[in-house]
Each structure stands twice: as structure tokens, then as C-alpha cells.
Length: 190
Image 1 (cartoon, rainbow, N blue to C red):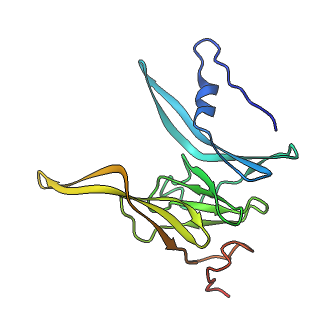
Image 2: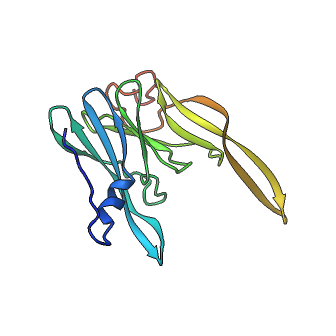
Image 3: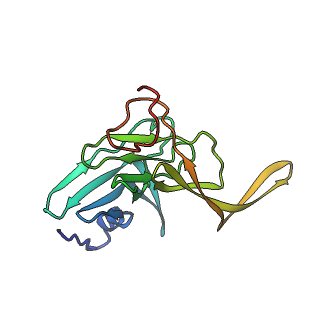
């Protein structure tokens, strides 16, 4: 596998910023590198990131083959869910990308064929976070939170601690199923 090093030359940090947000998930023979599509916005000494489009997924194999895996774009116009994604793997070796969006929490992608399933959340709650897929269920982290009224408005405080972790069964909503993906989830079109 190739190694990449980002080196700072003068004041230009663009390569370091580009690779700094990368996230990795690996199988025995594949490495999935998720690179955010972002630009750095500077205001004096303060730097913040502005996401400019969907992330890129680069696939590296032990055979020294490199390729790009297409990022799903459904619902990206209404919700920028496919940015700043966190990769993991399901129990069948599919790539699972989790987003920060509560309505479209991510996708499952078959790395061999590129076939994918976009995950939708039927009941968005601010304190729930999608983490990945286990067998035929979504693994969800439930944060501790306090909810109160402040000046007549609802105020929610989220904490880093988990109140619970749950497995929520996935179900097929529409479109053709990917062969071999989530085989225990019934496809209503068949």
C-alpha cells in the first residue's frame, strides 16, 4: 500500500487541511479512505471548515489497486447528508457511511459492485446518533439530554454520555435491493 505524507510549505496548509479530515475503515484486503470535500475559511487566526460537496471515498487494496467508490447523492439537494461521513463496516463486509444528518443518517455500499442503500430515519430525534449497521439493524447511540423551557422556547442540552444503545431493525422502503445486502430485510417488490 502506498503512503502519503502532507508537508507544509510556507503558509500553505491546504494539503494538510485536505487530508486532516480523512477517516478510514478497513477489511483484511481493502482500506476505505473517506475524504471530506471542504475548504478552509479563515478570519484572522481563526480557521473553520466549509463543506462544499459530497465526500470522496477512495478504495485501496492489498493488490495495490486504487479506485474511487461513488458516493450516493439521493436527498443531497434537500439535505447535505453525504458530507463529513464516518465509515465503518457491516457484518457482511459492506461499507457503511454515517452522516451527521438525523433524517438521512447514511448509506450502506457494496464495495464490489457499488450498489447501495440509502438509510432514512422515520423518526428524527436530536439526541439519537446513527453509528453503523449490525446484521439487519441500525446501531443507534442515545445521548443523555435535558429538555426545558427557557424564555418560552424549548432548550435542549445534549451530553456526551450514552443513555442507551439500541439496535433498530431496518426495513426496505423502495427501489430494488442490492444482491446479497441485508438478505433478512424483506423486499416488498418481490
